[in-house]
Image 1: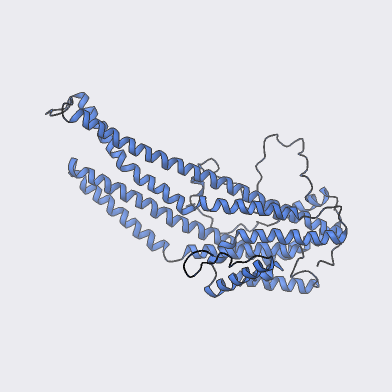
Image 2: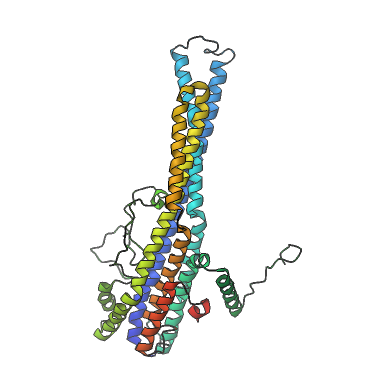
Length: 211
Length: 226
């Protein structure tokens, strides 16, 4: 416990933490969620439009060929194309080129979405935002007694730091060795038991069905 | 429960104000780009970290304390002393790790985006080659040249970007930077393991833990959450 602090000093440190840790993190999570959602939506829209235009170009080219250049079409069997047929040929060429060019562009945007993982990361920040509101709920009230304020202060700071750790745990897991990973998993198990949970509750049986 | 946010001053605009985060980065110069394009890597990434960056802006401390009726010089000096100590022992390391993480992330993304782009170009050229084969066979040498150029560029990028695992470097540095960030607040707020220690013990412990985190030895979850 911070026995050396007076109540006023505790309050001063609380307000600094509240601004530079909690508020900062909250703004960051909100901003990240908005950016990821917007990026994901834009890329989805681009991919959909590209797919639509590709299909439209293909079927339009097919239609023009079928109706104008085959059977009894006006341009069928002509030795030299007149102005109309020349324009139609040019249009069909453009449509065929588009139907060839657009799919790789669509794949580029699909791969972009997979690379940046906007759809995956957005729920992570959403969850962190919800959790930080819970941490904020533990913040001390100025009307509390000194002992209550100290206890509430401790709980508030630790809860906020726990939310921050959970949000960045994906970096930690990726950079740990297998032995450290196992120790990390065991530590998480202990925490789960401490709060009354059972990490093995949904363990698969030997038959492969969840018990 | 937190107090209600303060009333807006009359001089502040009625429109919602976009807040520059104190510690989580500034609004990008790409703010007018499409949202997905803002994530693209930078070609002109800075060469060195911003040595003026701070997790807490010292100049705002008196204002915060005054706003809440806590403008006691002793309290202010105590906080500023802690910030001075943290600036050398921890923030110095945090800036380096944060910068290294951002640069590795940028390099990692750059390699991925360049490969994706070149793959798209190669597919385009190949498709156009197939079209030209029957209609305009005289264009084939040009398409072949372009396709070979793409292959050369791919090899060049693989050689220059492939000597270092940027992904691993990104994750490792980011983990260290975030641990250092939490340690900063842990020390400043005097929670475990910094509570009930003498000033000398506290400072020594911070120095050691910051150095260990910087090296990649992280405190366990139990140590961090007790």
